[in-house]
Image (tube, rainbow, N blue to C red):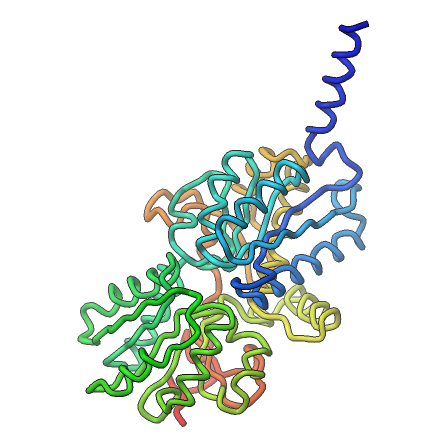
Length: 403
């Protein structure tokens, strides 16, 4: 009897630990900053993009005949909370893969957890090179790396002829990466790069901005390397102090919050001439999928889709496509399929090269569309703004619109 009881107990334990493929639904995990100090609106856009993907998949019959169940955990943009969230998803919820995040420090922190559980992590809106440079086999990225996006931005800076670039960034992997890439790419151009760093919780940028206002010469471009509501506060303060955007100084917002409607709530008409750097624009490429996603997102949430929402959608979809290709929701099979994947997403054909050098290119989608945009009218969406760069897709002859 005792032996029979142990066998039954072992069977129960085995069933409890069985992967999600044995369940009635296939569970996909999501992580995002949904509470402060994280960039809440960025997190909500990621999550809502994921939801549109799941609704679309389930309306079409699911994957392998099973409905997709999305479980999203809040990271608050804090690495320790991100690790705990990933642990819960991988162990307790038994998800087959995870997507999302925002905040590079969170993405970097959860990489080893993804490796521990053998669970693919599709990183979105985490730009630090370190996320993929760690070359963890379970980590894939569907947004840009700092070295990719800011080298493009630096090309625009060089072409536009800026001579004194000032970077005010948060002291994170992402923030330091912004400074590093601009310094490297502008090293031989004669342009001066001045940099300041601060805790990402700082909300008063008056000292740094006044120092720039008093400098001689004043910077002709300020790069605002913060995320969340503090990015918007910096932009507001820069305008109120008469620093930028102005006739003499342009301002380039590196954080994704400049792409959200809340940007206009904070800035009002003063947001005109602010520059952004989205890793994707709805309608570019102009494909049926890009159009249908943008419509579904706006119908569902009453706000325009942007690059972050597109990343949330694409993250779930590449997991679903990998499951279809593998014919299995086994975690290892999903990873193998992701390495062979070529899927036309909302922003182009997504694939993950196994490039070894430079290290950040490992399982990094290399063709993320990158734009430098500038608002020319109040309340524009990113898709309605002027594209300054790349020149092949520019909507204006000018490299910079000035007040």
